[in-house]
Image (cartoon, rainbow, N blue to C red; front, side, top):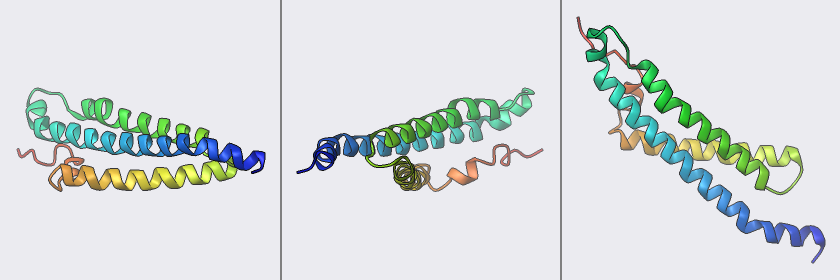
Length: 127
């Protein structure tokens, strides 16, 4: 076993853990995003009557954590994957895209298939 192969074998559990934790974190962040946007969608009409909007709440509490979790997951993946910088970036982005697709699908199902409807905050207000 060469030194390079030995290093990869020792890092494998760390990489698998990083992939698993990053995927779970991204899926949970998307579910949180769905919950926040659903709440903002439901409360927007009341907020408009009061002269405010739920959009800042949705962005601050829903979108910001999603972006931060995704960025953290990408950093963790790039830091733990073995290989050259280009390979680590390519593999990290590919894993991130797969986890994001899974997160969107789970959050969409979790929201009762209304996630993308709820992004149109205020579209349910009449008058």
